[in-house]
Length: 544
Image: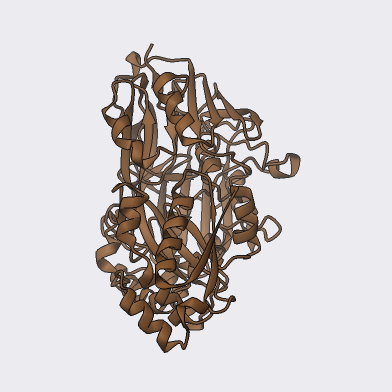
């Protein structure tokens, strides 16, 4: 990719808004609602501006100081923001590194290190103005050179970032001055602004060559990584030079790694934990009604799926994959695994997304043993002749293992011989994700707000999250068209075609959307759970 530095200026129309007590200039784009693909609650509501955040308590009355004790299920394993795909790592990193933009609790685009953006009439050039006076944890000043460096690192094949596909249409990155960056695309890319919220963290220029980022990340976030003891704890300390006035309010955030859900719950109810991630669904009611605990929940973007290794027989036959999908009782999964805290999934569009009504879903797999047996007959297979294994991780939480066990039960009732292999997350990651050494596997996909995030990485033959060995030339072309088309209705038609094809060929089958839940003690204030499952503690405080 070509990068260069210019001295050409750009003009912008500006508004001033208050974010966390600091004045921020917000540049407004003169583009149509469809041109930027801005992630709002409706694909039509985007107007090219970032949205204001609101404070829930007067700034001068917020208690400051103290250590927030957080109970979480697993170890982060990799804290490089450009390469990690691990949820616990992203929970930690959301307090250490920042991107240009993020999505707020209402799924509106809001500026973090950017103060605004402007999109050209041909939808190929994005001019972004940057916040001044921002300092990295290293003491270096944040400038446009850091943005260019960070995006180029994501694109570097040697880094191997799964986010590289988000920027594959970048033709150039120009930095006309220290606080302006200009992205030029080879052709329009509808979800470009969404891509800038999708863990596209900005790190100091040259820093990845100076340190092991998997273990020592630095950024502009509210907190600095102080220590990390593998499988024990991660400690973050307040960054005194954070660019939002008076934030963060806490001195320390301590993530304590406690794989056992019962132990995490006991620590939340009796101490020392004040925040609990990985709330067992069966205990949600007790935490919500308890005098010593509170519960925050939201209809999240996480969807659970059953993966098929299409290179393994008899799973190379789509009729077998469809038969298995019909044999899985999704409603039973929602009740038996989630205790009702979720919804059946038949497509990747989250229940709260306006795209759900725009995209015509393909084949829906209502539970039917009759349909399953008919497809196996058509494939010339007796269920008793089929032996499979289901691989699942025991962490984070029990949903993966519990789902695998119920799927095993459903397929056994059909007459198949099915084993379940429950393993540590690191083992599952190597075997299922890296080596693709599995028959069936339980996997989940996290909070994406644009259809490109639901389809491209999973179903494109070169998609970073295509762990099923799936390839279809027509789907590849449609997915590319979905990226470069900016009209919302046209994109919806494209993804409807994609959904019809992949729901028939079925390299994976969706199971359910689960609610995201966080347990808190009454002493914790200012924390808000978001649908994107991030855990930013910059505005969190402890009542004295």
